Amino acid sequence: MRWIGAAAATFVAGWLLGLAGLPSSYLFGALLVGLAVALARPGQLVVPPFAFRVAQAVTGVALGAYLQSDALEAAADAWVAVTLVSVATLVLSLACGVALARWTSLDRPTAALGMVA
Image 1 (tube, rainbow, N blue to C red):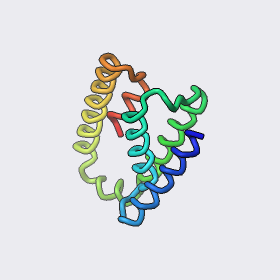
Image 2 (cartoon, rainbow, N blue to C red):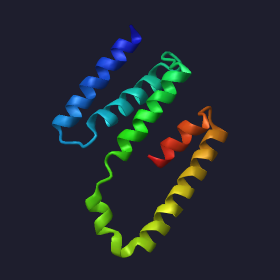
Image 3 (cartoon, rainbow, N blue to C red):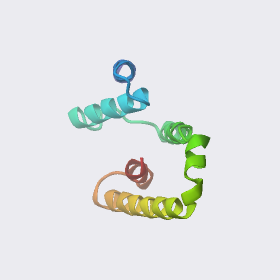
Image 4 (cartoon, helix red, strand yellow):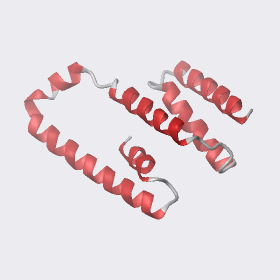
């Protein structure tokens, strides 16, 4: 029953954020609902490991789908600078994710994704 409530809240939050014109409204809606549930009732919604991995894969694909070829064409002239800044940002984000996993109860994949995304 808890999962039905969380799913319904996610749908409503995504729909409302979409009406407000926010891109990736359902992704942000799920993030906000997950944050609210985790803060209000920690440990109440436990995700099985297989479902957790599937959810991470779906999230990764959804995030990757937003990359458009027009953006790559616009950055083609400055590819060295773009590559250096992107690599530096990724390394810093992953290092922060490792630190977050070390000093909190988050596992490494979740902490790393949270810092990169």
